[in-house]
Image (cartoon, rainbow, N blue to C red; front, side):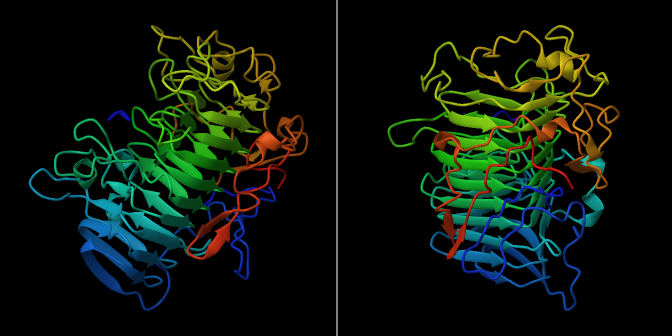
Length: 467
């Protein structure tokens, strides 16, 4: 990873992430832009912490984090609804090491749609100027973290630089001087991670960086991830993941980077089902020809389908596709990267790299003769905008021809459901083929005694159907 490197109205999709044994299923999405300010309950408790943490942080309490905190191996921390976890942005020690939240044990963030958990900085520092300031380190689930639940949780203003003295550098997770903290990191190939109904926004680096584990990533909103590199969701070897029903707005490089980098005899091939996601404005803030919407590389077995890609710089890419099934570089030719809808507005980007691709419009990027477009196998059945047919998705409220391609500030008034007659409603894959079945829609993932299931595939493009 380069150093440069709730829920947005979740879907009409009948995507039920059910926690068996609970009275009510988790519904990834009927609360776009509403009730996002936690800690509104009465009887608020305040506590300052650093060092080892475990037990329960009670609902609506305010936790001030003055230094690095760690959930010890074999221990658990539960964070109840409405808790505000506020990180000191001055850092630790003389070199101001960004404050890190290390999870060696288990972490359970149990917010609600009306009262989410918040990980942030002091309120006066939550400004557009600080969008990519990297004011704290992020959540790092280490190789001993067995379980993590992040539900109805807001994580923002992360991405501090990993420097000498950073716990992640001392633990060998990241490299001092080369890396910046993602908002969430996982590093246990046997771990189980459920990240649902949450907002991950305003970070220098990736939203989620998975280096190991089984995971459900569904019904989340990502916005403004990556300053001059990074993606919303970045997957490496040792992972088996369902990524579904998410909204990804203005990631610096890609909405999805799916790679089996690091594959070995002990760290297996990355396996990903990525479906029914909506990706908007990806890639325009990144120089070169690398970013744009979806990037699959290094033998990741990635089925990427029924996604709605709007105003992104490029189509799905498969570097080294002429050297298939090579863990060192090739793309896995068992992957299905198809049945996606690429829609474009009519506006020109205010940043155009003339010395590189020269791409200035989304429709032009989709039809660019990119060396990494595997046109023989990728997007054969996809719907792709052209200058004369932009394939307007007919959003309920998002001015597809007006929002700047490099804009990263998210407007809570937007609504990414579509109107009748939208091209997003026809031509998608039924998802009935066995190889396209979500990994965790039937058996699910068991975390903290509850079973969570991935959303079912819906025969529409994107996360949001008719309202």
